[in-house]
Length: 120
Image (cartoon, rainbow, N blue to C red; front, top):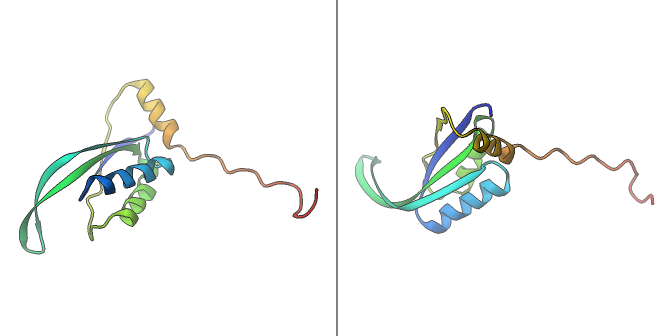
């Protein structure tokens, strides 16, 4: 597979994490999404140090699908600035990486019917 990646994002609760995961799988933007949590995140936001309980999503995809994946996560996410970061997968089981590639490959466009509307 060319350029497999793992994307990380967090969600404020399990339901949102599951909704993001399902959308990414349904759209073939991810081969697998693992949801871990709850975790505790400590971060600086608007000048204040914050602690939050979150759910971590580990998303397996390809670099070619990242832009659309990122846009989809942003559209589903309640945070103003969601964490969406990607790291390359340097190596992996050959069969797993082949499965990953096949799982995120866009489905071919369906050919249009040669018949005109209303013709039988």
